[in-house]
Image 1 (spheres, rainbow, N blue to C red):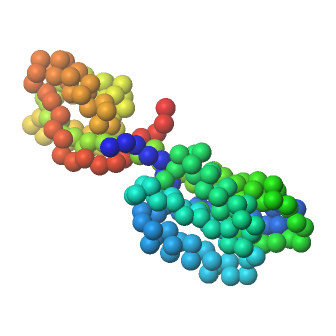
Image 2 (image 1 turned 135 degrees about the vertical axis):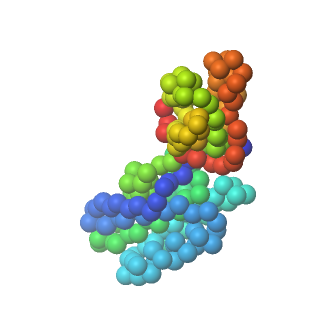
Image 3 (image 1 turned 90 degrees about the vertical axis):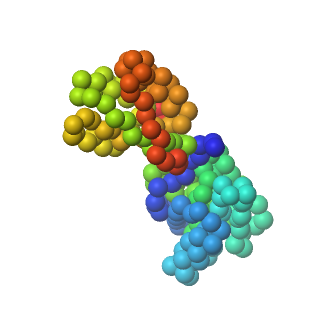
Length: 209
């Protein structure tokens, strides 16, 4: 399992280049069906636009698709896709809508404008740094609670819940890569009496540091 970057939710932004209006629209997608549905929804919303150029990239089977939507070949869809690849994003779809303003941009100008449209959409979105993670439960006595919570930030562990009853139970989210070190330190500090129990494996967002 390797980490990946995607976006949290749909977002958009726009700019004008030589009187042409470019609108960059991005959304997270988990399948080709979702990607196609997003593209079609944008096309419907911008039926009067001159072009609705799109690209999407999926983790599953490393699938990529793009369309120039009537722009000269290689000047639109591929530059949009290359923005994804440079940003390291997957499971995303972007549509860059163009309302032609009457001034030709030339091939180089189109490449730059569509790439900017995609980057504008990416910049408007919240990027998620998804990492293989483990949901953990850790039981301990009240005397160990302070030590346990003190070491969590060092291991980039997210504290989800603290339950105080006869003892303390912590629910944690930990990168799988940090789990061995966390387990070892908890065991050493507690003389072997405290160790995390993994309840679920999943991908989760951890801020990039």
